[in-house]
Image 1 (cartoon, rainbow, N blue to C red):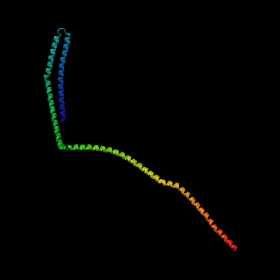
Image 2 (cartoon, rainbow, N blue to C red; image 1 turned 30 degrees about the vertical axis):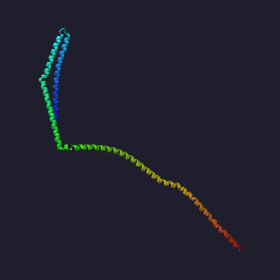
Image 3 (cartoon, one colour; image 1 turned 90 degrees about the vertical axis):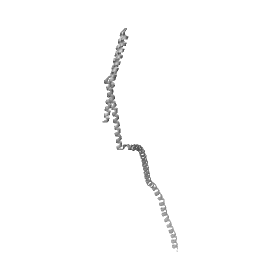
Image 4 (tube, rainbow, N blue to C red; image 1 turned 45 degrees about the horizontal axis):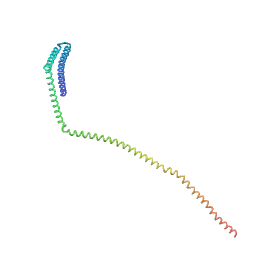
Length: 229
């Protein structure tokens, strides 16, 4: 309410002041216009006149000067304009005083409210908290940037670990399959090695009957000896 009253009073004062100045300016312009018109008409008439034109022109100039003086006197001594100017000044002064008082009252109320709520003592603490909040916001922004970078590094590391794991699995599978392929290849060689042993056994069997026939040959002389006896 106080602010609206101040604004209304200031607006009214400005309007009255502007109206008073506008009226005074219009009256002044009217006087100047009358003087200019009289001067123009006198000059035009003076050009048309013959011998006595200069005297007539000077007379008109004097009359114009008199008119101008009267207009200026009226402007300065006009009761309405003077009263309007006084009212404007009075209203403007009252508005300024009212505005000043309202401002002082508002400041007093704000001071009392701050004192009652304890804001005056906590101002430094609030400022310190704001500074801490700003610092924490900056740290959070830095941590977010570091988190993004660490996530990218972790993703690269996980890909490398996965590749290493797959490589190890492939090598393990290759090692597991390697002995099976080697036994299949060496099996024919072992079978081929058994053939000479079989040949040796056959040779031994063939040699055994030859030894047995030797006693039979020895027996034959014995028989012949018995027959001779």
